[in-house]
Image (tube, rainbow, N blue to C red; front, side, top):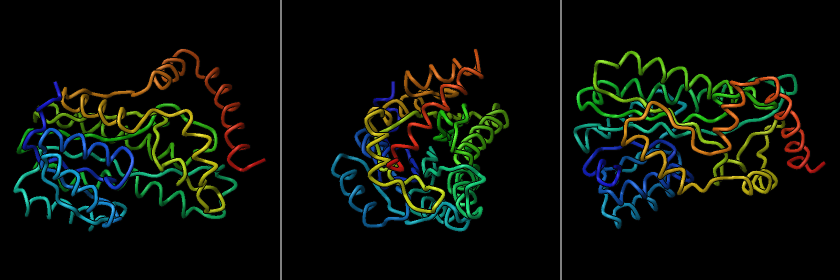
Length: 277
């Protein structure tokens, strides 16, 4: 169904400079979408925009940090200046953090992950919403399986993704008679640079150790993007991407205590390998 749904549609993608965001841009360009690529890295965005144009799409680059409300507003303003409308907003920007709350030297990292993952989605959605309502368009929020099932050592990240899911679920109710679909995506592990950028309690990124641990267990970004586009095209309420993710969500409903025990064992192994212990 998604083959031509987004042809000539104006689609904003935050976090478009790598990973899932990059793949979403390329696959939507294949459909002939009019793209707005937003992220902090202008150089990477320009490279991706060139490839999108070569594939048959249009592409506008907007350099922005979604943690800042005024920059989210700028994304929307520049989109309207260029394309005059907004059909779809994909809130994809995000990053990870790990560590026990009691181990954190301060709450700056916790606040940062909430600013990017949660508040960035709220800001972009708020400023885009009147225009999406006008077009009877689509809103997509990229949450996480950890927005459904909490995990050891991911307090800030889980909080941000649970908040995202709750926000978009509530927004769906608000928009039920406005012909706007709100789709929440729950990825499991996806092969991107995300794993190497997870912020440890020390403030350092997990780097190569994080990539080695996670990437062998991940879905490809290409497949994840394909599933996200299909779900958005069909105006699905939600989509859990991986079979493992679906299993975890199901087991958590059936026996939360069992999932807690399994999760503790997995996360202990994860921490040991990432920290090289």
